[in-house]
Image (cartoon, rainbow, N blue to C red):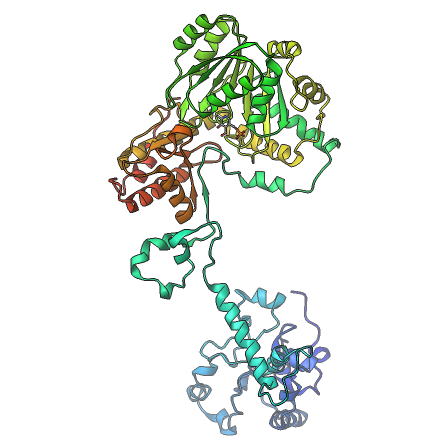
Length: 612
Ligand SMILES: Cc1ncc(COP(=O)(O)O)c(C=O)c1O
């Protein structure tokens, strides 16, 4: 606090209400109510009360005569708003205890001027000095009452605006009534604001009960109360996945130009980080598209109509390879397994031998629709032995489970931004080996946006052939930085433990797994719905009642399984949230499950060391 100016300059003697400030020798901080009254004259009505004037003029006269009381003998309450009457003159001779009784519990603070004046609502005297305009000494026992000085301002605010329509002749609406109506309207608005708001994303009986005021709720709806964190939502799907705040923050930054130098730096770093995550020395080509765009890029660049290709499918995304290659006119050998089966390298070997002259083998690393993670290392080795190029869909596995692009001899790895890479959807990637680029140079399928050579040439100059999703590239840069900071091995271990925690929790509840019970299955856990329960109802109930989004079954598995994702920015509490939610809705649906064990078991399993 800077030193105060001399008292006289700030509180001239002629100001009656400043007498108390003067008497204290140390002036009140600027802005305190009493001193404000003296300086600015905001409380002139109070200051000019005849009694106050008489009292202060008596004091001035006494001072002039040299008979004024010493300041410490003052017993009148100095609080500006404390209207305790002037004590009778005999009070000076009374013992202190009597004076205290006279002052009474209301004014226990009177006369203690060395203590800092707490500002009402401010935690410290510092807060008072800096910003409070109140500055009244808190009198702890004194009941609150409105300050007189402020009343006129309030009245002004509640008074009807001059623009209001005048009341009809003879109408009883007067100015005060209109003011009361406005005040009542404001009170109603305040009450409405305090009520829990209805979440527009939720529907159904429980969601509507969440909008009721607690007083109207019956005890029978105790469970519905769980839904009342109305806006809180949990994204526990295998993609898109939650995005860390650091990544979200960069998305909110002002736009930069994609040919500006600052973007080129980000672009270069993102591409380098991608290569690190891919574990490849090859180019990783970046497209503005969803993962399926990178699928299409691979097929368009590698396939000429009539080329023989082999697709191994055991779920939705294997089927997608088959559909795309067919769309480009390839001669497709489709090794179609039951959904949920794990592809066997020996089956592939015999299929390749039988088909003969297969140019490209298309595989899925993590089949997100079933939770199966294939042994692509073994499968790729078999395909290489047969002289075929290997293309792997790693949209949901890259960054979550081990994938060695170069060491395993994979020619093309396809991925996307919205899964374990912790970004929003919108970016797709193809890593391309030299052999794949050579094949692309020969392939005759039409392509333009997804043309590898065009993209590769541009990227070599740190350029993009078309305007890339600038903000998403910036987000990818940050997200990959986070992943590499954690370390790929550490991330793989975390994912394996998350998968294990989820499976153990599910089993403890008495549910059956659909996905394999193995540490490699670390991307998504697929669970069979109990008999008589439609898995779609579990998914919608979790979403609508509890704000938890998980995934349902796809294709033939629709209604039969539900899936809990655990890739990217996930920790064990995401798993326990999902398990607790599943337990709750299944119990409500009347399923025969064991309550209260899943979360504990999941936490224990997460602690144990994973072997991927
Ligand atoms: C394994 C797998 N492949 C491909 C895709 C398709 O990616 P997108 O939806 O981004 O086109 C997905 C997305 O769910 C996936 O999980």
